[in-house]
Length: 243
Image (cartoon, rainbow, N blue to C red; front, side, top):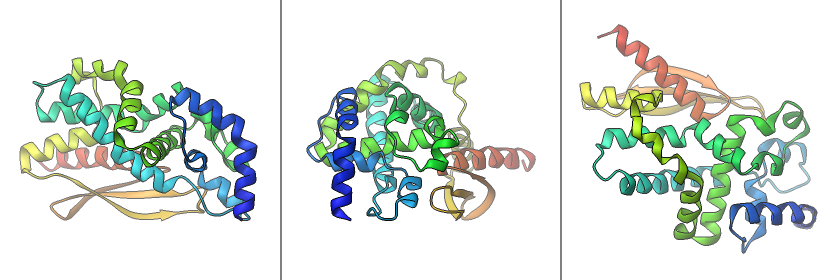
């Protein structure tokens, strides 16, 4: 399996070099970047390779992006209220915001997808693109540490910070729900994964919103972030009806 993985790295080397030039980071461990680009549908269709998809790097990258973008906003808007900063950050790092950055980097071109996912337009799906961007950032963090990663994230988001000049135009159900529940109940909503269904390459996630341990809404989608946004929107409707 290790030999097959090395063969795949060799085959992908020209594309990996091209993407590293776009990202502005030369990896010390190229296999990290390859892993960040490997969707679970590819490993599902290639069982002869080691299971090496990008989901754990996606988890790590999500946290790094939240921190880096939060610090950028802290410096850019030193007098803004916490609620405003939370709303701006959520708008920037929600699925559609990360997919926008991924499209600028043309990440879809470099993804390793299974044939089924590729044929269904996977390279242009917001859910896949946003997750891949998170995984690439996670890979850079593992390879080079936080300071280098934060600079790269800043380069990707710097021209979008002005979204915060008019927070009234930002529509983000999760931020709206948090603002409402903290203001009226002094509580922060929790998002709980209830179940995931389907094969590894085509899962559907169901997320529940809980307030003070009580479930108030749930929704399903092809990505956890999209399911959270849907569930938050349903929770807002529920709370409005039960005022």
